[in-house]
Length: 190
Image (cartoon, rainbow, N blue to C red; front, top):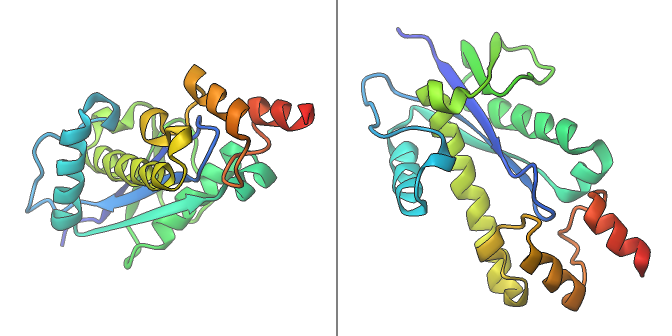
């Protein structure tokens, strides 16, 4: 029996709106997936196709989230760690080892390592990066459908000029991270 190695990555630490989304993925060594790399290096079309393939071929995968309210309460770093814990603990099996993209590990009881640029170095982290990114992008597309005037599908919640213009015109929705400086400043102006 091979070791169950989970890869973990996050998406959405920088946006002003929505959840921070993490994924934990345990790949099947007998069923490799071609083209895995850092999700930011892939086109949207390729990411979506790979995300589907990962969901079909991985032994196990799970999404973990932390809400804007949790981000505001805990701060983005601690909320990200919470989302990572949720992703790994939500797997139907306990991994033998966990590789996390970045330079920090959550406070958990898993044998694990943090790997800087891990999403480019380890297939399981790449896979987590891809499904987390597609999941969060889908969140933003859904938000866009509900509030098209904000163009969430375009900027994905990141602090762009167009996004700030939309906020100035239409206001701050409940899904915004109110502790983030640009949002907090706009709230204080009112």
